[in-house]
Image (cartoon, rainbow, N blue to C red):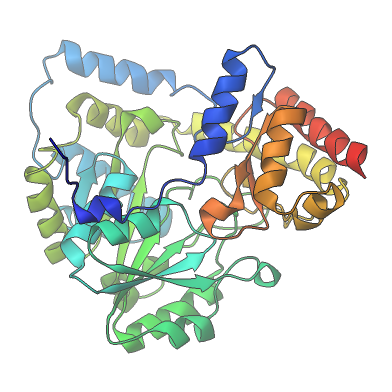
Length: 395
């Protein structure tokens, strides 16, 4: 029997990280000492109080279906969180709990986009944005955030690509992969364009709790009532509370969109995992000290390894303001070491230095690599030392 797959699946672009990840696993299985810096999740366990709250919920019999949009108590805690953190007031019918922030984005695109609708995606981008847009029959429109502008797009760039088919723009702050954070003034300027052109803003704020130095997280939805109405916020507990495997995210915004998302979810996931929702209730209602401790650990690692990384010949890097990634430009390092491109340089790092990093081609910028510092400081320093030695040995 000949299998004919759906065109929507055939249109997906294979992950640029799959080949390097598979090779790293193979080398590790063969006994090689591989240091992996590709992790997109905190290396801390979920705080004990959250685990215990989830366990109690199961023992008390809370193991059945919940409303499709999520438990009322969890939605209540999310409402409180928005009020406390950003001063934004949402009603319960303006929030849906989803099976991770990624599922929130997927569901949003499915209810929002018609065939040919355009979504503006700043470059560098998180790898799933364009693929999810394509799965909803939309068209990704890429706008390059120049390294000279901290990888952030400008109002002029945004305005230049808006057409009659533009439905939305994605703003990811702090950013994966760059760690850059938009300021209040930058968001206001972008928001003004969106209001003028009637473009929906999708604000991915999953890294909001991981901000360093004097930088602040500002949600574009908090800047005015008009921008709040124009914005759908995507967030969750995965990064802030080290709950990636629990798969609890949420979307907040216009009640008509949220209701449509809930209707779609009722025919796909039914509801987010009940036990995980009880864990998320505790994540927001319980003590927040573990969140602060994790952020301090990430910031310390960043401050230690940043100077070591930029001391490597041919490598330059804007210091991240948030998240837990470094996104250095290694184009010159690749040339110095005799490689034609950064993808080949990444493969050489893995084969010879036994360090696995993610090539920037997967994020739309082929001159960069992404290094996660969501691993121990000891391993981070060893990895950067190996990269340094690798480059020096070939010059």
